[in-house]
Image (cartoon, rainbow, N blue to C red; front, top):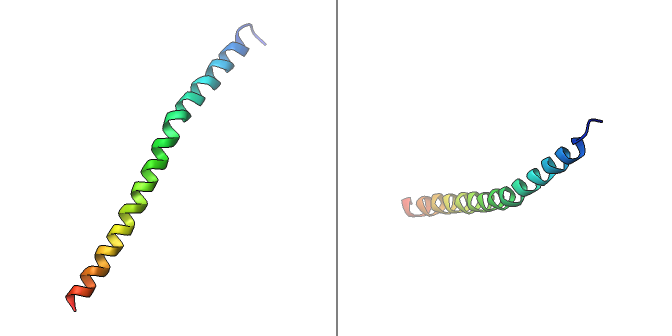
Length: 53
């Protein structure tokens, strides 16, 4: 192995870990918001069907 390879790999893993540290919560929050939006759309459709009758 060439000199510095270990340090480079170490820095890459730290970089990826830090990126995951802030991206994963954003993705989770987005999925929660999408689920709530889908539930609201279904509720709106049910109410529209109820009031059309």
